[in-house]
Image 1 (tube, rainbow, N blue to C red):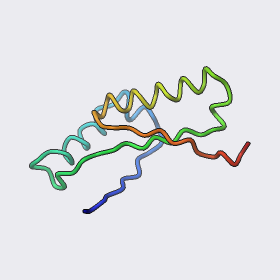
Image 2 (image 1 turned 30 degrees about the vertical axis):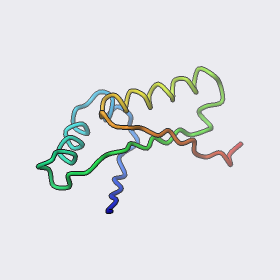
Image 3 (image 1 turned 60 degrees about the vertical axis):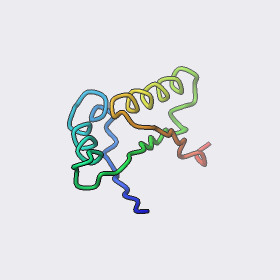
Image 4 (image 1 turned 90 degrees about the horizontal axis):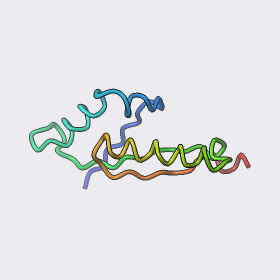
Length: 84
């Protein structure tokens, strides 16, 4: 089994408002594509921006928007937990 990791830019607008990343993902996952692979999206949620309920809910909604837009499973990972 081969695994590929693509580190994408952190600007959420690329995933929520643009079709460029969706096009790349659909090409990679296409049966006739160069990799013919499955995609899982990993979204890093900084814990420092989740200090209140509204900001945490906002981060979760962004993760859901990326999941829907890319049509792939998404995992939200809280980062920078040592900053507390």
